[in-house]
Image (spheres, rainbow, N blue to C red):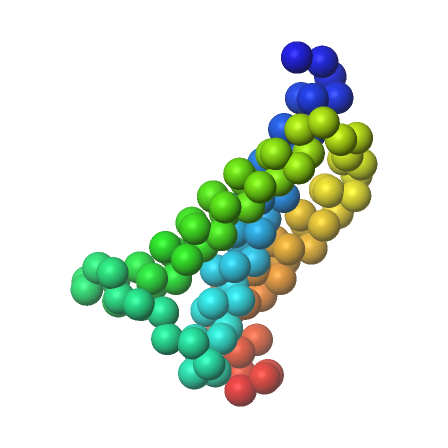
Length: 104
């Protein structure tokens, strides 16, 4: 495996993880606004179990797709890093109740 392929694998992994982070923040935000109703998959955890399940699906599907897309392409690792950072920040903000109250 050459150096470029290793960076592409890392880029796909990092971007997929950040999309998962964004997904849980988005689902939490939309649930607070009553725009989505996440399923309860485990009663003691409530709707958090559904939110985490959705996040895991987004992460896994994104990882599978991005790893195939990035496999033979030249990927700008710095751009992926910046996009990942932004998605993680947005995901964290989406899980922070004071942010919900700004919009709700």
